[in-house]
Image (cartoon, rainbow, N blue to C red):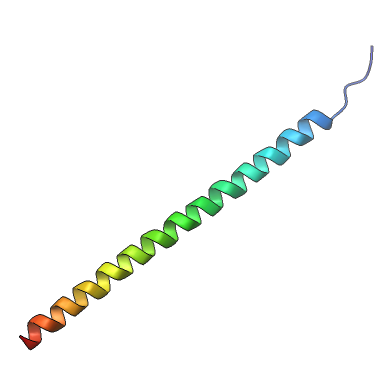
Length: 55
């Protein structure tokens, strides 16, 4: 009977860590896109308000 080696398990942990890093990066990217959209909508709203005051 041979002793078990811990190599397989360690590889699994690495892939999990990489996956977690990936999802975190994706979440950040999505949040950045969402912020950009909300900022664009905010400035559009402010421009419309200013225009309605002028006109």
